[in-house]
Length: 176
Image (tube, rainbow, N blue to C red):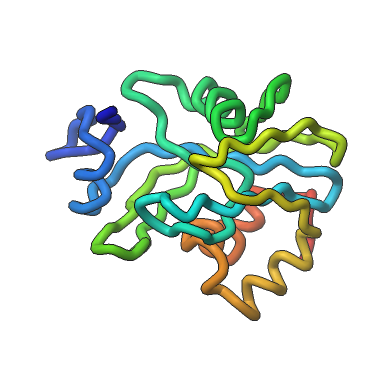
């Protein structure tokens, strides 16, 4: 199935095929979600057959909205599709932009709407094996320390979020 995502071409937003967007490094829309239980964050490890960054740890959920799909709807939809999580309605935290090489000749140049939801570790999670190979609750401070020690285990965007946008995303929740 060909997926078209919102990307900017010559200053206008257009629906462009997802793989083409990444191969050309086009600036495009994205959505990222963090589910928190106090200072613990739910992470996912990307499935090994993903076309970029396979096997790396990422935030709870990250994706691209479909053409004309509101970002909040996308966040809820992808939590269900990737992790089987329902009944969670994340709130918008901020919008950030980054550009990162994700390997295989692909670039993520994303304008990302960041969402956060609070839950407990008893949250029902049923990962879709086509998307996710593992999930884990990790302490926020342990996560930042592990990224500093072993950055190669984590997606470029998660590293960027925590290194460059931590205060904008987590605000008063986490003071490191």
